[in-house]
Length: 97
Image (cartoon, rainbow, N blue to C red):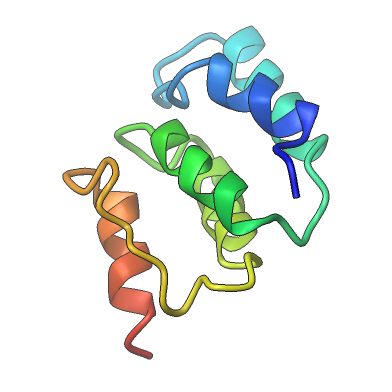
């Protein structure tokens, strides 16, 4: 499966803004995120790891986490990209559950 355009657009927008960002930035991130339909591919999941920002982004980080977990190999995936991010660490921890 190739990477869908909606995933490419979210990833190219950069990391999620912080909760201190403008309403417009948050709304655009939400719009881009909502364009991605589940399930995603393993390749898309790996790309999306780079989208996590430093905080919850008003719940959008949780939505992204659940989206990544919809990939076929989510339970066994290598989450070494962006490994220092708290959200990526949470993904690693949730594999053990």
